[in-house]
Length: 556
Ligand SMILES: Nc1ncnc2c1ncn2[C@@H]1O[C@H](COP(=O)(O)OP(=O)(O)OP(=O)(O)O)[C@@H](O)[C@H]1O
Image: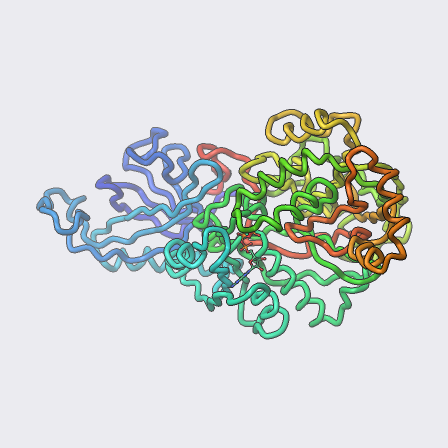
């Protein structure tokens, strides 16, 4: 659809006289008399280029400001050329900052300065662009920011102050900043004290652990404000209204990577500024009608649970602990017995092996499927539609993984389940049955290359809406410890171990669940996906490359 022209003038850009136009979709400029299709010289990733025009979509303009210039030339403190031509004597100018895409899904703040012959025209342009920006009501105006000063390499505060705060201030976003003083400070503040009505969003500066704090605080607060008891596993949870932004500053920034495509603080800040919104599913985890935790990325029992348990004992080693614990856990090659019951997802949400990854504007996540209805509008779905048919699988497993999203990260760019969706109301349940060490290694290595990691007879993968896991012996390790201590359970306990693990003399009956990097206190759990319970300032991973044009030419 042709957009209505709002303003049009001849202004100079990079010392070239251009025809500049503004409509509600884009600001564009084209050198006068130039109909060729070329980019501004020296700008590798400049504004988008269509049919000879350079253009910036209005929704990607960050700000516009009158530029204070003593002279058209910009080199402060240098000898300057005396203006000669009419173009160079355009001393009034305004600068437009906009989103510029670079490699690997990174965004940068680009700038273009447009020179005018008189100040009235200059102010007219600034006002016209600002008016268009003010119509973008999805953009946040006020944010509550939590900074974990100890996340990752302890650079959270510096990253925020140097890279993020200047972008927020340029976009006229006001902030209340809290630097956390203890673990769970942000969670507890959100749960009880924070005046959420004042804000358009919550931002966390830290890693995945910090993000987990934020979602626990925000979801709990939303439920308690609405009188919903999150201890009841079949309760319909109320979606959170505030969007969450993640400024990556941790040692693991997987959620940010999977929802934006990079773990770059400037990119994340720009997604917040433009007011992106990416819905996201959340799994609730219960043990006997007691709420344990929420999970948004990986729930792993067996291999990933054991790696985390071991790495927690080696915290002093820093990030190297994950590699060391990984090798150690791989060598121990433990398997665990148990029963998984699950409720499969509807067919319309695809399968974990359909090679249809979740990308910006994902069709599967936008489907009004029964899966989503199950959590959004329980009343309107019949009981049979909602309940489906539960399936039961028993066996000995090296790993049981539930991936709520692809779990892509720089180490495994396609992730644990490459086609898992962010917001379709399902998780991909991956069962790795007992196999040889060599086969397990082959399966693990496929996470780092293009081959299908599920294409082995010992690997099964299902897309599910709910699942329950019961270990063969239902006690937790702590319960076993107690029984060991009083001596009564000693004989039974050891007889089990000898029967199940005669060769390795292993002393574990249970593994632990790794829930987004935290260890759960119980092995027997009930998991339910809540479709689109939270929203992030993100747009998923953009499919198109830098040089493709994401906007129809008719919009210009
Ligand atoms: N001021 C604080 N002091 C101590 N711990 C904190 C503080 N603020 C937050 N935390 C906790 O620090 C943990 C790790 O934080 P974060 O995720 O930001 O960094 P990380 O380096 O990625 O974490 P990890 O070491 O788990 O990989 C979180 O679980 C969070 O609850």
